[in-house]
Image 1 (cartoon, rainbow, N blue to C red):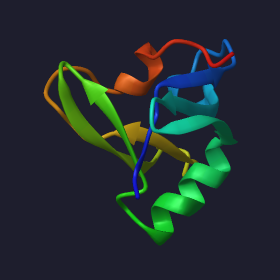
Image 2 (cartoon, rainbow, N blue to C red):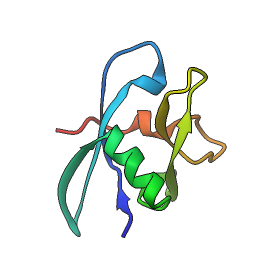
Image 3 (cartoon, rainbow, N blue to C red):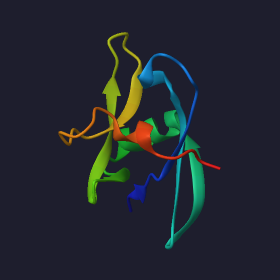
Length: 93
């Protein structure tokens, strides 16, 4: 079952792909959870439909991408709105 990402933890670094360190979520159907981006990447590689987020009232899958330097990171599928909608999520508490 896919989990909805509703919050992030990030470092304040100039490279946006290195900013997110953890993702998490809380819905009425699930208890709060928080994992590292490394764990999310591993989960997505096992099951591409592991995580999603809501963008402009629609669900989008979270996918693994690779930076120009070869580093893996997570982002939302292209939705023609923003490059990486995860960066606009509120911080995890």
